[in-house]
Structure formats: C-alpha cells, structure tokens
Amino acid sequence: MCLMLWYFCDDAIISGFTHLLGGYAHLIWLFGFVCLFSFSLVFSNKNNLLIPICLYVSIVFLVLFTSVFHPEYADWFHHSYYNLNNMLVHPRGAIWAFIVVWLIDDPEDIYSTLRIVCWILFIYYLLQYAQAMRIGYWTIYDIDGTESQMTYNMEFGYAMMFPAVFFGAVAFLKKVKIYYLFYAVAMITILLGGSRGSAVWGILLFPIMLPFKWKNFTKKERHIWLLACFFLLPLAYLVYSYLDVIQLGLSVALSEHGISSRTIEALFSGELSDANGRDEIYEMAIDLIKTGGPFGRGIYGDRIYIGRFFRWGYSHNVILELLVTFGYVGGSVIVGAVVYGIYNLFRRVTGITEQIIFITFFVTSLKLILSNSFWYVPSFWVVLVLIIKWKTGTVKQKKLLGSG
Image (cartoon, rainbow, N blue to C red; front, side, top):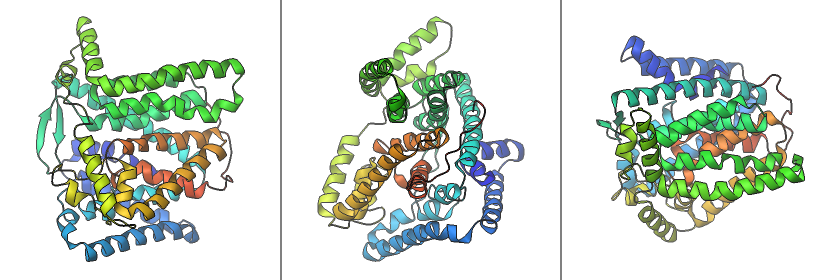
C-alpha cells in the first residue's frame, strides 16, 4: 500500500522534496521506491509474481526483436524523452503500475490507498491551479526539456481527472453526496485550465457507471437516467467541439465577478485544443497498419513515420497504436481480449469497493482514445491487472465501512 501511494503520488512527493531539499528530490523518490519495492517483493507470495515477470520479460524480448528487425528505430529508442530507459527501466514508467497494484491482493487495501492518493493529488493539483491563476501562467516543460511560460497546461486536465473520477464514483456508487462537491470543484478546474478530452471523460463518467446501478433502479429512476444521458451525451460532444467558446463564456462570467481569468481568455483562441492534427495522425496510423503486415511493426512502429511530422510520434489512439505495434492480426487479438476483459468486469464486479477501483482506473485510461500512448499511462496497466486478477469474479466482495 505504501508502494502504491509512493508511486501514484510521485509528482506531489517530488515537488515537496524539491521545495525542501532542492535538486535531490528525484533521487530521494527513486531511493524510496526501490526500498518499498524491495520490501514488498521480500514479503510477497513468490508464486504471485509469475505473471508480472512474464509480462516484463515479454516486453523486453519484443524490444530486442524490434531492434533487430528495425534498426532504424534506434533514434526513438534513445530519444531524450521517449527513450526505452524511461519506458521500461525507470520506476516512474507507466508499466511499473502493473506490479505495484498487482502486489495488493485485497481490494479494500487498494481502495483505501486510492482514496489517500486521490486526496493528495486533488490538493496538489488544486494548489498548482491556484498558483497558475495567481501568477497568470503555467510553467511547461517540452519533451526536449525546454522550459516555457504558457497560459494553459494541457496535461493538467488529465492529471486532475484522476481524483475527479474517483470523487464522482464514490458520490454515485456509494451515495456519499459530499463527494459531488469535490467532483464539481475538480471538474471546474479542468474546464478552466485543462484540455477538452479530460472534460469530456469527466462528464461521461456517470453514463459509464450506469451498468453497475441499472438493475437496482426503479422504473422511474431508469427513465430519469435515460433522460439525463440523452442530455449528457450531446453535452459531452458540445464540450469537446466548443470548449474554447465555453471557456470564453466562463472567462466573462468570472471577470464580471471580479475574478481574474487571464488563462481562460488566452485559451479561447483554440490553442488549448488537444485535437490539433489528430485527423492527419489517424490517417498515417491507418496506412501503417495496412502496410505493416499481420503482426505489425513492433514497439515504436508508429514513431519513425508519424514522428517526422509530429514530434511526439505516437498514434493518439490506443486501438490504432496496438494495431500498428502488433499488426492487424496480433493487434486485433489483443484489442479483443482487453475489450472482453473490460466487459467481464462490468458484468462480474458487484462490490461497490471494486466498482469504484475499476471505474477510477478505467475512465482515466480512456484518455488513450484521444491522446497519449499506452506506454505512458499507468491507469491502462492497472486495468490489465484488474482484468487478469478479477476475471473469475471471485475477488473479495467485502463492503467498506464508513462513508469513504
């Protein structure tokens, strides 16, 4: 549990150590992770480690296989930001989330740790937002390490989405109404300072959770929720399509009440959009799938081509990226297995605790439909853990006491 807390709160912990001790913060975090990880392995069930080890070894072999048949990928394998060391070796890499959560067997322990994590991150990102509003800009670090001062921060929305989704899930599934307030605060900061993708998934959270509650609804409640979804779905579309206009409206409203909103005013021009160039990226990814053979182009197979036109290089859609990497045969098998596993979780997970855990990681991993790469999103790897460990439906179904 301490390891999970240390891993998911890495930004907040490093920031705290940086303010206290200066430039050694990353080393302190790394030392703490290694100690906690070693301690966890010593006291874990050794038979329980077989699947994480096999997964990691398989990825290493896939990297080696790709490097042999595609030596032209070398520049991306050694990229200053997207290099394999950051992806596979450094403990802050997303794939480490798999074993970090895998080591915790009791869902109640995962829930308890997740609750603490989300409160820490909520406060940390709220302070970040307040600081940006106070000074009028965000400090952004580009993939080449260049620091710049900007009036928006696209990653902030996805970061704040993690506690927002947890709070929304607790409010809806556990019926703890005070959490709606915390969810609303998080969503407002996302709308004011985040990207359209994070705003959309925050809104669609409640329709996504409906399958867990549907069978317990009365006929009247079902009609109410169907009506609500009728409005929520087009609302999410409008937010995605016209976030700049919405932000401008919020900017004017805040300004009329004497609240400075320079960040929003700068964003309404459309610079915030995380959809810029996505259509072109998708077209290139589809061409790579068509010409990549039944088993794909290997790890980073999209980077060498998409990276010529867009500096990040990845496909910006998890399905396309999997198909480019593993091919239209291999990738389809993986996509099908993941989709089936998620469907099974919706069917089999009946405990409220487990539902909240699943929804938190599942909805936050949905960012991969519109942005980023699955190699860099910890929630995606945690969803794989839940699919594998909870697949039989025999996961402990104990109710948590208290309000959450």
